[in-house]
Length: 412
Image (cartoon, rainbow, N blue to C red; front, side, top):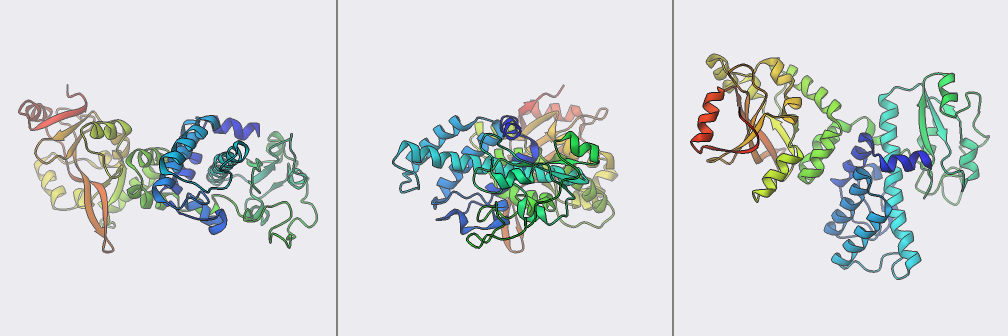
């Protein structure tokens, strides 16, 4: 438990991302097992919470506990406030101090443990570890079968992990760590020679799951999410509140930056005809917009391929003020640390000013809450509609003439 408890106070990016991918899919349910197995990787559920606004507030409270490490006491305070505000009654545990404490702890611990496990799964896969090592979590309250698996080291594709990757029941704090050699297995507390107990795969007829694994827990949290993290991020960002979407993408910058560079390469070669995800609005940009009375629908910043290889791109190339290929490739990093952000006084567009290159400064015009149709469905996003490099002198003139207002940063 100490390893997991430490993680609760120091959340890691993969854990936060694993949880936040659920927030775009709030599923009202009467019972926790209305969803099964890997469906929980993609949905936030509180049994008995059947109103979307109630689920959204509960989801945000758990998100704070995970991403900020606020702890159980802070979550209990938020839970009581949310329940009172929404008038939620009849939930299991309501009415007694012991019952209510139990229910709050179940919600808190279940989301902490499964998001931790899913985050660890992503790290283990990305790290390409040769062995995964099962570790028993709570020595003070041992579960004998879980203890029997402690220290077992198996390759990632062993069938054991499909049903026994922890947590393996309500409150189970077991976890998995990775190793590349037999010496590495020993360093993390495993035993290279340990074999699985006989009959480990046998099913309990009452639960339909292997002995020692609770009903509904015979799956690997996060396994269904590992291979499609980027696709999920792109799909979910438009559905998430801007601050949460911003944090989610920031937690996965390595994957999104890599995908962006591949998109730029394909687009410049004429192989891509769909918008690409360049990045997200940072928290300070979102706060500046909210302070002006406009809350953006989402955080993502998309780019149309025509800006790199289309009529606008050709026009700016002829004018000598187009962005160079290396600037396009570095765009996500430049967006994370813009020189300044302006608001166009006439159109309301955001003007991102990037780090200057000589007397010119790369500029992106972003339409906030841009509407586009994908497969006949209207999607609201934030779209870059122009990209070129005006002179710094012309930008100063726009500010002096009241054509733009400065939201963040400076123009020297």
